[in-house]
Amino acid sequence: MKHFAWRDGVRLLPFIVVLAIVVIGPLIAPFDPNNQQIKSTLLAPFAHYAGSGRVALLGTDELGRDIFSRILYGGQISLLISVAAVVVSGCIGLVIGLISGYLQKWPDAFFMRLGDVQLSIPSILLAIVIIAVFGSGIVNVIAVLAVTGWVSTARVVRSRVIQLKETDFVAAAELMGLPRRVIIWRHILPNVGSLFITQEILQISRMILFSASLSYLGVGVSLSTITWGGMLNEGQNYLQSAWWLAAIPGLCIAIVVIAINLFGEWLQARLAS
Image (cartoon, rainbow, N blue to C red; front, top):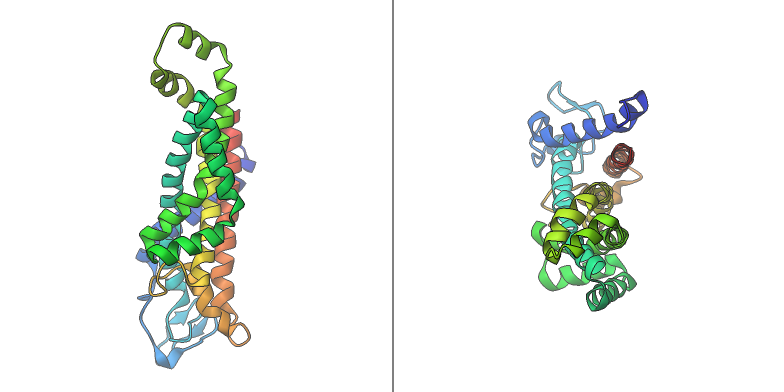
Protein backbone atom coordinates (compact mmCIF):
# COMPACT_ATOMS: atom_id res chain seq x y z
CA MET A 1 0.00 0.00 0.00
CA LYS A 2 1.39 3.40 -0.98
CA HIS A 3 1.92 6.18 1.52
CA PHE A 4 -0.48 9.11 1.41
CA ALA A 5 1.06 11.91 -0.71
CA TRP A 6 0.03 15.43 -1.62
CA ARG A 7 -1.19 14.14 -4.99
CA ASP A 8 -3.64 11.93 -3.12
CA GLY A 9 -4.95 14.99 -1.29
CA VAL A 10 -5.47 16.83 -4.57
CA ARG A 11 -7.68 13.98 -5.81
CA LEU A 12 -9.42 13.30 -2.52
CA LEU A 13 -10.11 16.81 -1.18
CA PRO A 14 -12.63 17.91 -3.86
CA PHE A 15 -14.70 14.77 -3.29
CA ILE A 16 -14.70 15.24 0.49
CA VAL A 17 -15.73 18.89 0.17
CA VAL A 18 -18.51 18.10 -2.32
CA LEU A 19 -19.79 15.18 -0.24
CA ALA A 20 -19.83 17.27 2.94
CA ILE A 21 -21.70 20.12 1.28
CA VAL A 22 -24.27 17.79 -0.27
CA VAL A 23 -24.87 15.86 2.96
CA ILE A 24 -25.26 18.89 5.23
CA GLY A 25 -26.62 21.20 2.51
CA PRO A 26 -30.15 21.65 3.87
CA LEU A 27 -28.72 22.44 7.32
CA ILE A 28 -26.66 25.39 6.04
CA ALA A 29 -29.14 26.67 3.44
CA PRO A 30 -29.92 30.31 4.33
CA PHE A 31 -33.48 30.24 2.94
CA ASP A 32 -36.36 27.91 2.20
CA PRO A 33 -35.61 26.83 -1.39
CA ASN A 34 -39.27 27.25 -2.38
CA ASN A 35 -39.79 30.61 -0.66
CA GLN A 36 -40.80 33.20 -3.26
CA GLN A 37 -39.86 36.87 -2.89
CA ILE A 38 -41.49 38.65 -5.79
CA LYS A 39 -39.76 41.96 -5.05
CA SER A 40 -36.37 40.29 -5.43
CA THR A 41 -36.70 38.43 -8.71
CA LEU A 42 -33.67 37.78 -10.93
CA LEU A 43 -31.15 39.25 -8.52
CA ALA A 44 -27.56 38.83 -9.64
CA PRO A 45 -25.09 36.95 -7.40
CA PHE A 46 -24.11 38.91 -4.25
CA ALA A 47 -26.99 41.36 -4.70
CA HIS A 48 -29.08 42.41 -1.68
CA TYR A 49 -32.68 41.38 -1.19
CA ALA A 50 -35.23 44.19 -1.39
CA GLY A 51 -36.16 45.54 2.05
CA SER A 52 -33.40 43.71 3.90
CA GLY A 53 -29.65 43.61 4.19
CA ARG A 54 -29.36 39.91 3.41
CA VAL A 55 -27.25 38.87 0.44
CA ALA A 56 -28.27 36.48 -2.31
CA LEU A 57 -24.94 34.65 -2.66
CA LEU A 58 -25.77 33.07 -6.02
CA GLY A 59 -28.68 35.34 -6.97
CA THR A 60 -32.36 34.54 -7.29
CA ASP A 61 -34.57 33.09 -10.00
CA GLU A 62 -37.63 34.47 -11.78
CA LEU A 63 -39.76 33.86 -8.68
CA GLY A 64 -37.29 35.34 -6.23
CA ARG A 65 -36.19 31.96 -4.87
CA ASP A 66 -32.65 31.77 -3.50
CA ILE A 67 -30.37 29.95 -5.95
CA PHE A 68 -27.80 28.98 -3.30
CA SER A 69 -30.44 27.27 -1.17
CA ARG A 70 -31.89 25.50 -4.19
CA ILE A 71 -28.43 24.31 -5.23
CA LEU A 72 -27.86 22.76 -1.80
CA TYR A 73 -31.23 20.99 -1.72
CA GLY A 74 -31.05 19.98 -5.38
CA GLY A 75 -27.55 18.56 -4.96
CA GLN A 76 -28.70 16.26 -2.19
CA ILE A 77 -31.62 14.94 -4.24
CA SER A 78 -29.52 14.56 -7.40
CA LEU A 79 -26.82 12.64 -5.55
CA LEU A 80 -29.39 10.47 -3.75
CA ILE A 81 -30.96 9.46 -7.06
CA SER A 82 -27.58 8.72 -8.63
CA VAL A 83 -26.22 6.69 -5.70
CA ALA A 84 -29.44 4.68 -5.38
CA ALA A 85 -29.39 3.93 -9.11
CA VAL A 86 -25.74 2.84 -8.93
CA VAL A 87 -26.48 0.52 -5.99
CA VAL A 88 -29.37 -1.15 -7.82
CA SER A 89 -27.64 -1.38 -11.21
CA GLY A 90 -24.39 -2.48 -9.53
CA CYS A 91 -26.10 -5.37 -7.73
CA ILE A 92 -27.79 -6.47 -10.95
CA GLY A 93 -24.58 -6.18 -12.96
CA LEU A 94 -22.53 -7.96 -10.29
CA VAL A 95 -24.85 -10.98 -10.14
CA ILE A 96 -25.11 -11.22 -13.93
CA GLY A 97 -21.35 -10.78 -14.36
CA LEU A 98 -20.56 -13.51 -11.82
CA ILE A 99 -23.03 -15.96 -13.35
CA SER A 100 -22.09 -15.17 -16.94
CA GLY A 101 -18.34 -15.25 -16.34
CA TYR A 102 -18.23 -18.41 -14.25
CA LEU A 103 -20.87 -20.59 -15.90
CA GLN A 104 -20.35 -19.26 -19.46
CA LYS A 105 -22.08 -21.38 -22.13
CA TRP A 106 -25.78 -20.46 -22.57
CA PRO A 107 -26.08 -18.09 -19.54
CA ASP A 108 -23.14 -16.10 -20.85
CA ALA A 109 -24.54 -16.01 -24.38
CA PHE A 110 -28.01 -14.99 -23.14
CA PHE A 111 -26.91 -12.15 -20.86
CA MET A 112 -24.28 -10.77 -23.25
CA ARG A 113 -26.71 -10.76 -26.18
CA LEU A 114 -29.28 -9.08 -23.93
CA GLY A 115 -26.66 -6.45 -23.12
CA ASP A 116 -25.88 -6.01 -26.82
CA VAL A 117 -29.55 -5.40 -27.57
CA GLN A 118 -29.81 -2.81 -24.82
CA LEU A 119 -26.62 -1.03 -25.92
CA SER A 120 -27.96 -0.85 -29.47
CA ILE A 121 -30.78 1.38 -28.19
CA PRO A 122 -29.74 4.91 -27.14
CA SER A 123 -29.97 5.07 -23.34
CA ILE A 124 -31.75 8.43 -23.31
CA LEU A 125 -34.38 7.14 -25.76
CA LEU A 126 -34.92 3.97 -23.72
CA ALA A 127 -35.27 6.05 -20.55
CA ILE A 128 -37.80 8.41 -22.13
CA VAL A 129 -39.91 5.48 -23.37
CA ILE A 130 -39.88 3.74 -19.97
CA ILE A 131 -40.80 6.94 -18.11
CA ALA A 132 -43.53 7.69 -20.65
CA VAL A 133 -45.06 4.27 -19.94
CA PHE A 134 -44.64 4.08 -16.17
CA GLY A 135 -44.63 7.78 -15.29
CA SER A 136 -42.12 10.11 -13.69
CA GLY A 137 -41.02 10.28 -10.07
CA ILE A 138 -37.89 9.60 -8.06
CA VAL A 139 -38.46 5.83 -7.76
CA ASN A 140 -39.15 5.44 -11.48
CA VAL A 141 -36.10 7.51 -12.41
CA ILE A 142 -33.91 5.34 -10.17
CA ALA A 143 -35.36 2.22 -11.82
CA VAL A 144 -34.74 3.64 -15.30
CA LEU A 145 -31.14 4.55 -14.49
CA ALA A 146 -30.58 1.08 -13.02
CA VAL A 147 -32.00 -0.64 -16.09
CA THR A 148 -29.76 1.37 -18.41
CA GLY A 149 -26.64 1.03 -16.25
CA TRP A 150 -26.18 -2.66 -15.45
CA VAL A 151 -24.50 -3.67 -18.73
CA SER A 152 -21.14 -1.96 -18.19
CA THR A 153 -20.83 -3.38 -14.67
CA ALA A 154 -21.77 -6.87 -15.83
CA ARG A 155 -19.17 -6.83 -18.60
CA VAL A 156 -16.37 -5.58 -16.35
CA VAL A 157 -17.17 -8.19 -13.68
CA ARG A 158 -17.53 -10.95 -16.30
CA SER A 159 -14.10 -10.27 -17.78
CA ARG A 160 -12.49 -10.39 -14.33
CA VAL A 161 -14.32 -13.61 -13.40
CA ILE A 162 -13.12 -15.29 -16.61
CA GLN A 163 -9.55 -14.42 -15.62
CA LEU A 164 -10.03 -15.70 -12.06
CA LYS A 165 -11.58 -18.93 -13.29
CA GLU A 166 -8.22 -19.91 -14.80
CA THR A 167 -6.27 -19.37 -11.55
CA ASP A 168 -4.89 -22.22 -9.45
CA PHE A 169 -6.93 -21.53 -6.31
CA VAL A 170 -10.21 -21.69 -8.23
CA ALA A 171 -9.11 -24.86 -10.02
CA ALA A 172 -8.17 -26.38 -6.66
CA ALA A 173 -11.56 -25.51 -5.21
CA GLU A 174 -13.27 -27.17 -8.17
CA LEU A 175 -11.13 -30.32 -7.75
CA MET A 176 -12.15 -30.45 -4.10
CA GLY A 177 -15.77 -30.68 -5.25
CA LEU A 178 -16.96 -27.43 -3.71
CA PRO A 179 -20.37 -26.27 -4.97
CA ARG A 180 -20.36 -23.54 -7.57
CA ARG A 181 -22.13 -21.07 -5.29
CA VAL A 182 -19.44 -21.58 -2.63
CA ILE A 183 -16.62 -21.05 -5.15
CA ILE A 184 -18.27 -17.88 -6.44
CA TRP A 185 -19.02 -16.53 -2.96
CA ARG A 186 -15.77 -17.40 -1.16
CA HIS A 187 -13.12 -17.41 -3.87
CA ILE A 188 -14.22 -15.26 -6.80
CA LEU A 189 -16.34 -12.49 -5.28
CA PRO A 190 -13.65 -11.24 -2.84
CA ASN A 191 -11.21 -10.89 -5.74
CA VAL A 192 -13.73 -8.93 -7.79
CA GLY A 193 -14.58 -6.53 -4.96
CA SER A 194 -11.96 -3.81 -5.54
CA LEU A 195 -12.63 -3.65 -9.28
CA PHE A 196 -16.37 -3.57 -8.67
CA ILE A 197 -16.16 -0.75 -6.12
CA THR A 198 -14.07 1.53 -8.32
CA GLN A 199 -16.31 0.80 -11.29
CA GLU A 200 -19.42 1.78 -9.34
CA ILE A 201 -17.89 4.97 -7.97
CA LEU A 202 -17.08 6.08 -11.51
CA GLN A 203 -20.64 5.09 -12.47
CA ILE A 204 -22.02 7.67 -10.03
CA SER A 205 -20.75 10.53 -12.20
CA ARG A 206 -22.42 8.98 -15.25
CA MET A 207 -25.69 8.64 -13.36
CA ILE A 208 -25.53 12.28 -12.24
CA LEU A 209 -25.17 13.40 -15.85
CA PHE A 210 -27.89 11.03 -17.02
CA SER A 211 -30.40 12.03 -14.33
CA ALA A 212 -29.65 15.71 -14.96
CA SER A 213 -30.28 15.16 -18.67
CA LEU A 214 -33.66 13.57 -17.97
CA SER A 215 -34.66 16.39 -15.61
CA TYR A 216 -33.51 18.97 -18.14
CA LEU A 217 -35.70 17.35 -20.79
CA GLY A 218 -38.62 17.40 -18.36
CA VAL A 219 -39.05 13.61 -18.27
CA GLY A 220 -37.26 12.90 -14.99
CA VAL A 221 -38.59 13.75 -11.58
CA SER A 222 -41.34 16.35 -11.31
CA LEU A 223 -40.20 19.93 -11.81
CA SER A 224 -41.64 20.68 -8.38
CA THR A 225 -38.80 18.53 -6.99
CA ILE A 226 -35.57 20.52 -6.90
CA THR A 227 -32.80 18.97 -9.00
CA TRP A 228 -29.87 20.50 -10.83
CA GLY A 229 -31.22 19.27 -14.17
CA GLY A 230 -34.59 20.85 -13.41
CA MET A 231 -32.87 24.14 -12.54
CA LEU A 232 -31.13 24.03 -15.91
CA ASN A 233 -34.51 23.50 -17.55
CA GLU A 234 -35.98 26.52 -15.76
CA GLY A 235 -32.97 28.74 -16.41
CA GLN A 236 -32.59 28.13 -20.14
CA ASN A 237 -35.13 30.84 -20.96
CA TYR A 238 -33.09 33.49 -19.12
CA LEU A 239 -29.62 32.90 -20.57
CA GLN A 240 -29.32 36.46 -21.89
CA SER A 241 -30.91 38.33 -18.99
CA ALA A 242 -29.97 36.09 -16.03
CA TRP A 243 -27.12 33.78 -17.03
CA TRP A 244 -26.60 32.51 -13.46
CA LEU A 245 -29.87 30.56 -13.45
CA ALA A 246 -28.43 27.97 -15.85
CA ALA A 247 -24.69 28.54 -15.45
CA ILE A 248 -24.50 27.85 -11.72
CA PRO A 249 -26.29 24.46 -11.70
CA GLY A 250 -24.35 23.46 -14.81
CA LEU A 251 -21.09 24.39 -13.10
CA CYS A 252 -22.11 22.42 -10.00
CA ILE A 253 -22.77 19.32 -12.12
CA ALA A 254 -19.35 19.67 -13.77
CA ILE A 255 -17.54 20.13 -10.42
CA VAL A 256 -19.24 17.12 -8.82
CA VAL A 257 -18.54 14.87 -11.81
CA ILE A 258 -14.86 15.90 -11.87
CA ALA A 259 -14.57 15.39 -8.09
CA ILE A 260 -16.08 11.89 -8.27
CA ASN A 261 -13.86 10.92 -11.20
CA LEU A 262 -10.73 12.12 -9.36
CA PHE A 263 -11.79 10.15 -6.28
CA GLY A 264 -12.46 7.06 -8.41
CA GLU A 265 -9.01 7.28 -10.01
CA TRP A 266 -7.40 7.74 -6.59
CA LEU A 267 -9.24 4.75 -5.12
CA GLN A 268 -8.40 2.60 -8.12
CA ALA A 269 -4.71 3.41 -7.75
CA ARG A 270 -4.76 2.75 -3.99
CA LEU A 271 -6.53 -0.60 -4.32
CA ALA A 272 -4.24 -1.69 -7.17
CA SER A 273 -1.07 -0.92 -5.18
